[in-house]
Length: 115
Image 1 (cartoon, rainbow, N blue to C red):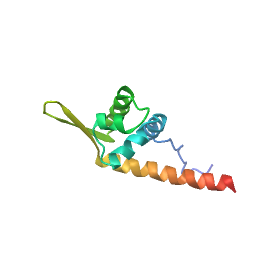
Image 2 (image 1 turned 30 degrees about the horizontal axis):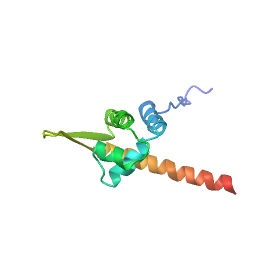
Image 3 (image 1 turned 90 degrees about the vertical axis):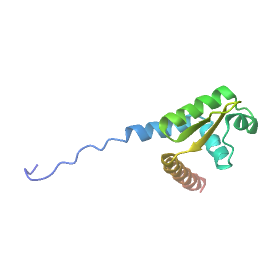
Image 4 (image 1 turned 45 degrees about the vertical axis):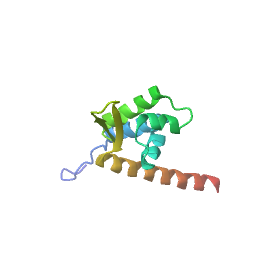
């Protein structure tokens, strides 16, 4: 190899974002939660009542993961009875755009495979 020639370093995958996508797609309820939030259903009890087969325990675990990743924000109101709502963060909106692009890519793959 010539001494003045630059070497290309190995490109590593993005660790955190790849883990986020894997975790979100691994949770079968996250995409449903995003759809509920888009429909302005943002309270956990209302979410559970709106989706057949979704339990409060599973929903809370899903919401917790999304809050930890910074995709969702938990807003707790100091009321009696207590009221909690979830909203998509600014970062979460960017992340949801990435998921949308992945869905478009999957649609293209499906179309290619059906030909």
